[in-house]
Length: 333
View 1 (cartoon, rainbow, N blue to C red):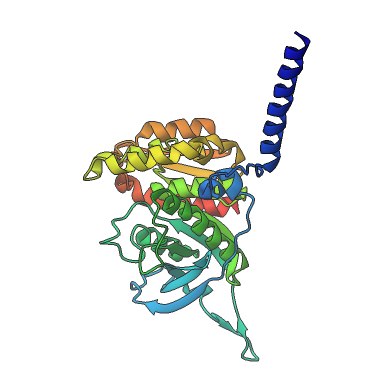
View 2 (spheres, rainbow, N blue to C red):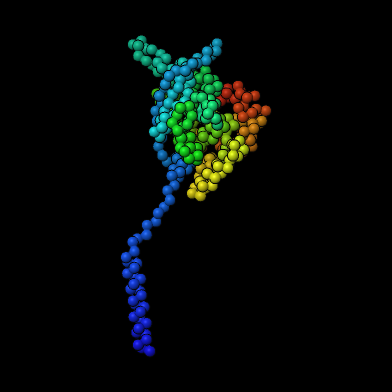
């Protein structure tokens, strides 16, 4: 019996020795983590980075004839860089704010600083788009009121550089483009005060920018898209040829790796400190009036105005809406 126990003990020690040797010979296991390149675009992470750019005025464009008794302005194309890529746009400069509007007695240029409105347009068909579409008419009124208007085309439009090939990253790049433009405006020598105007999807961009930056830019919103992400995108898929099939496939892949709640402006409204004028038409067939009513109920420092019977472009109340916007900016600066 004793001999049997000795043999068994010997076998056990031998087995343990082999296992230990094999473990000692095995290289360390290295955990390979999946890269998540779009984490940098969460609203929280976008708020941690630095934005910077510079504005360059390009060639002057044909400008509308000045209305009798109304200040004139000059229209320019302009460009700036957003994270190394060129973005074009349209600028409306009141003649009183133009290059060297005043010459001193010693013939030195005396530049006059003016308020600047960054205008973010709504959705446009890229195939039909021309620089300034979606903002041109309001920009003219702002310029007549003495405000400079800078309306970026955004990546992929108006001869600007191409956006990301990924549908979601291309969307997030609208935020970085807007933030780089605002950083450029802050350092621009023509700038006195800064405001934001956003229509439809541009309103969504404007709100997200306010959350990311924490800046107190007075902001006017016309029928902004404010549904939670990604429903804010899926809501419009009926207008796509495949009814959103490809987009839903891309979304399913995105949701495997990312928490969509970190990309939704509805979750960060408390970060907005800027005064906001929210304007909405009750007959809007693109942005349900309940979206704007709901948003107004959640935000602080917001003035909400409805225009009975007005459509997505506030056509029936357009003149009143523009004049109200101008007065809002003046009292907010």
